[in-house]
Structure formats: structure tokens, C-alpha cells
Image (cartoon, rainbow, N blue to C red; front, side):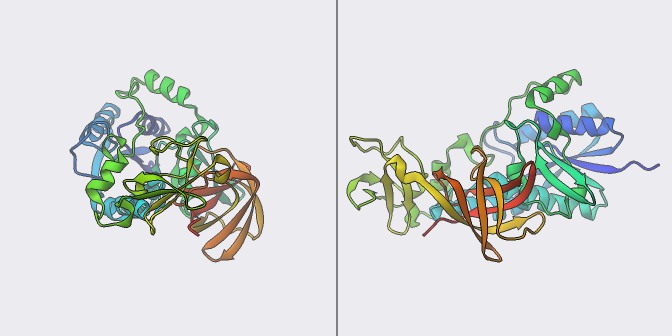
Length: 356
């Protein structure tokens, strides 16, 4: 019987390396693929750097599997980096990992393996795909602290039968333990916490060096209160995020927080903590793994690290919804994703657009 072929997206880290090792033991024909997303230079700590590709190749050699580096630099620049810059210049705060998963890992890479007759694509994400009846569903990882289903909400229902996520039933402790037991060369390698294309995680410097210098978002302006009172000056509204308290450089008898970067008027609006709370938001650029019937109740996360909150989702148009929360949410941020769940099942999500 011919073995099924699976391409493992190998970043050089412990998660994707263990994914390849597990699938090899499950009798798949495993192929390692490392995506080249930038020129191989710069910080050694960056994901997808030359060192990371070398680590992926070392693991592939250790496992005795074929390994390829696939050049997606142009797609990454056009879809991920450009979006990152544009969102900040429009006063929003993007999540580039979500964009990368949509257009690169489960877009360009999925197309790449499809064209070559490879049966499955596997990654080291901590999430699960389960078949219930005749349908496949994306579900939370069992380790809620590590669950990464949030960043995968853009997957399509027709892709799920061809995606394998072996780590969805594991905790990170399990992963490390298994990697050590299997003597994987990267078993003790630390996790990357940076935005992969932003050197030293300094997004402000990255914007200054790569964005249009004439953009309103990079121009100096006033820091103002909700009533228009001027508190001080800033060096660019793009450098401030909703909920930020530190680094404002202003004195006040009570703590002040960023309520909104007002790019159009070159202002940063600040207010009290209570001004950060809202019970509703609008979202666009929607993806539903299976089309829902509106209105519907769900639990939702408004950012990767936020808690699950109950809400009612109402349709405004085919690509816009209004979300009404049972409890007010703090620092709802335009550009971040809201993702909806029915217990453990991911329903879909979209981009928050609270720009009014």
C-alpha cells in the first residue's frame, strides 16, 4: 500500500520538528518544507532566518526525510508586511501571524503542495481538527494555555480534511518531553516570541524605516483628552495602541490611557480606564468555516491573549457583523481579530473595525 504524503511546514523550532517525527512514526511519507519569507540576513532570533532554515534541515537529516526551502518572499512582502504597515498607518493594530496563516502557510504553501499531489499539510499548531459526522471541524487545543485555534480561524472547511495538527492533544510540557525522548536536535530550543520580520521586536523602528515618511500616522501631533484638552505632544499616532498607559510622557493626577490613535487629525486621544470599556464592536473581512444562521450566540476572543466572552452576533451585511457582548470588553482594538466559538469548535471570525 502506497504511503500517504504529508508536507510538514518546518520552521526549525521544536513544535514543527516534533510534528514531522510523529507523522513519520505514523507511517506517512514525510517531506519537510521551510518557507523562505525574507532575505536570509538580519537577527538570528527571527523566525525564517538562515539559522532557522539550517535547524530545519538538521532535523530533516536526523529524521532522514527530504527537506526543501520554498521561496515565498514576494507573497510575504505583498500580503503580510504590506498589510502590517498599512494597518498601523491607518490607526489599527494588526496580527501578522493571522494574515500569514491565511495567505502564506494555508494559502501559498497549501497551493504549492496541492500542485505537487501531496496529500496533506501538517503544522505544529496547538489546535485540533476532528471529524464529526461527515464534516471536519477546527477545535481548540486541549491545553488552553497554549491553544492556537484563534490564529487559524481563516481556514476553509474544504481544507480541514487535508490538514494535520498532531500537537493539538499535547501541552508544551508534553512536547518538550517527547522531543527530548526522540533526541531531536532542537529539543531544548527556546520558543520565538517576536514578530518574525521585525528586528528585535521594535515595530516603531520598523515603521520609521519602511513606511511612507509623509504618512499622517508618523507625524508629530497633540495628545488630547476626550473633551479636547491638550495634555502634551507625540511623535506619531502609529506608535500608540489602545489601552497603552506607559510612555505617554504626560503628567496627570489620575492614570490616563490611550483611547484611540486619531491618525486623520494627527492626535492621540487619552482618557480614564473606564473609557476603554465597550459592549459592542463591528467586524469585517469575515471567514466562516461553515456559514452560520444569524443572529447567533457564541463565545468570542477579541485578541489572542484575551478571555472567552459570551456575545450575540448579528449580521449587518454579507461581510460585516455587529457583536454585542454580555459583559463590557476592555480595549477593543481595530485591526485585531475577533474569533467565535461554540464550546470547543471554531466557527470563524473577522477583523475588528471600530473606526467610527
